[in-house]
Length: 443
Image (tube, rainbow, N blue to C red; front, side, top):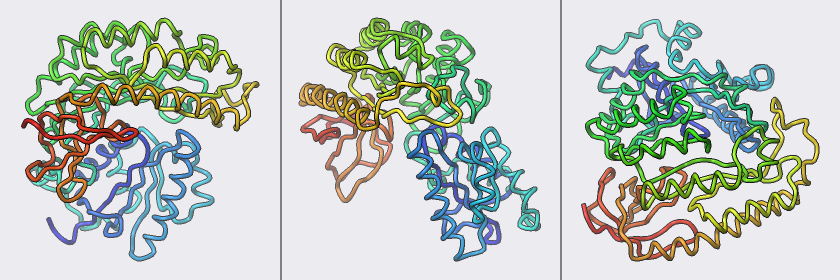
């Protein structure tokens, strides 16, 4: 690479969907002749791919921008903020954050390079596009790509039509729109060439792909047959009848992870209706039971929002009873906080913050009790696993196929012979509150 080329670095905040968007930004910048940098301090263009899903995400984005503003003082650098925060608060950024040189919202990630070139033409005066061979190398080089891991996220759609009363996403991302099959396959090929062995399919509403669980199943079958793929993990499957029917195809899809992520948000039908969501206690119970039947060893990840306006003590009891009866292995909990631009903002009957915190703790304590039993049942068992990274000398971060990257449990393994991307089996020896320790028993 030529030293005179301008460089870029992308800081990605928020969920795996943003990671997939950052990959699109990365590719578009390469196509305009920019080269990746290994740190924000050494880059000519520092991109922040922002998040504003909940208040804490907004606060993290603001702090990241302010920190980046300090970094740019040490060199002639441009700071660009993109994504959900820019989409939601463009005027506030322009008025209150002079350190930001350029901003644009969602839906323009693949055009990032062209947008940058239009706004800073002098920086591109002597830039030349990479030749085809070099562009191909940079596109798949796992060392240069600063978010590269033995897993990768591939986005199969964007936006959402659900209209959940607590969610700002449709306002930020727009209506549901499929990615083309050709684009999905191209993204997957690029990830596999870069060394990824696991592909996580992400979107706001994965089960809505092509409005048909059959077409989603067909896509999963095509991807599962691609050379180099070892694990295929569809994420964000809305808990409805489409997902229930998709489970019938699980046995036909090679390399499918023994995993179901299907966020319920609640189990009280009354609260769900207020949230503008479908389902009820019994349907969700049947859904999860069916998932475990069609794929023995499958583990479930879900989430609950506690304290939505109108939630009563008996609604909380229903969540607790659901955890007692179904025992999902992974539970994410959110205290409800009203968001501007959502239907829930003006709803009455929101519990006091202290009461919401109490309800969250009740659910968390029961889940941790369940998790203790789940951990005990894992002891002495072996699981198919992948090596994610080196933690320290002799200690490796290993992940069972039942656990999604970055959000679920990990297994710490002591070994002198492992390397990132190894696939084999891990024997569970002990556990902490969430994570485990184990021994690598087969490669």
